[in-house]
Length: 109
Image (cartoon, rainbow, N blue to C red; front, side, top):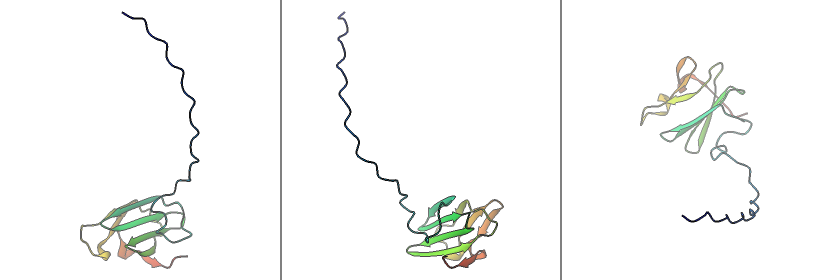
């Protein structure tokens, strides 16, 4: 059996390129002034983002974005049947299901 040969010294590392800040790919679709959604999602071409500090739910269908007042609700998911109409969209919160049509639509601040 041959004795082990010595290892070659490590080569110096090349400098890393400066890192760019990470930007969420979907963060540009909701209205300005809404920061840090606690939950976001997408299903069947509908996107949503819930902003608990502002008590707002942003919902986007294509390029159209609507904003809703959620009051005391803590939106954490979506429940939408495939091919459903806009009014049939339901979200889930701490107490169960919430129909989008039951939330008050508001203008972006």
